[in-house]
Image (cartoon, rainbow, N blue to C red; front, side, top):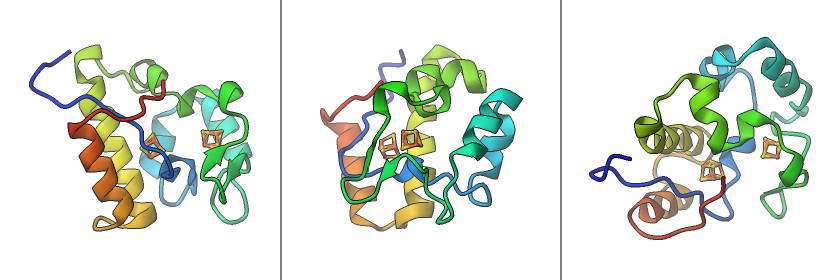
Length: 124
Ligand code: SF4
Ligand code: SF4
């Protein structure tokens, strides 16, 4: 762990990573294995959001069963990221997802940035 970098924290009421729209997520999608890509593409709904996403609650309806690419604990393996770089990598991924989903100046982005400096809800 790099002590000079903030540690990654997921925030409640975000869900930006559940917007799977392949046109917006091409780079991340291309980096996944064929198996994970197939699972990913099978979950894209007509509106671009995951079919397992509850948009009202902004939550996952299959949380304990969600695939590997939804689990930050698996990011290192999936994207070949060294463990020391995982927190900055996860933060950069979240910021990209939040920016494309809600906007760079959105309230969600502000809450996310605050949470990286303070304690938040850490979802593995
Ligand atoms: S903070 Fe990151 S991991 Fe958590 S819901 Fe938002 S985009 Fe997903
Ligand atoms: S399976 Fe759950 S965590 Fe993964 S993208 Fe769908 S709603 Fe989000």
